[in-house]
Amino acid sequence: MSIELVSYADLKSLLDLEDAAITDYPALDVLRGSVTSAFEAYTGRLLEPIARTKSIYVGQQSTAMIRLDAIPISSVASLTVTIAGDAETYTENDDYEIAEYGLRLYSGVKNAVVAITYTGGITTVPDTMNRAALLQIAYEFQSKDQIGAESVSTEGGAVQRPALGLLKEVKRLLNPSFHPLRW
Image 1 (spheres, one colour):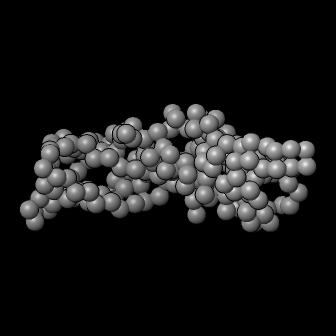
Image 2 (cartoon, helix red, strand yellow; image 1 turned 135 degrees about the horizontal axis):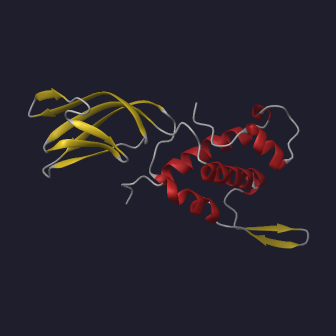
Image 3 (tube, rainbow, N blue to C red; image 1 turned 120 degrees about the vertical axis):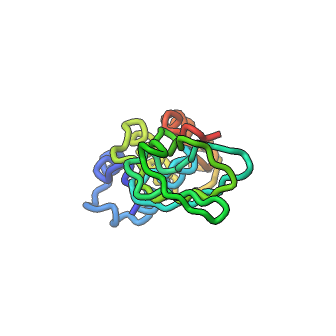
């Protein structure tokens, strides 16, 4: 189950839907999940606040910055650094600290495998992200029958639409939510 960026009640009000549950509108339910994935890809972050395990290979260049995708980090269950077959368990406040981008090691590592089990992601959806999700889902739901079309012919002529992707306003609303190390 992914995080709910916008409630069905808000979508129901905006789209004038009548049924009681989002499952009564299968396309809307699918779109809500796919918009979450699109937001994660655009911002460079994982949003759902769950436990994750990640292994990172650090090459020849020494680094103390460990980028984690699910930010903010709420807890670290374990952090192990393996160099040339020797594994060392790191301890928070002694060997590393939680940073806005992931973890900052107190000493740099190179030619190492860093294995991390952590919990991270947003616990409260920011208002700007909620609005962005509301706009994007409504737009995609209303034009689900013409997916990918940039021009739609109607009885009164033709309508030009933005290309398939996130709306310009949605991107503007999401820009403050970028991962700090997104390039």
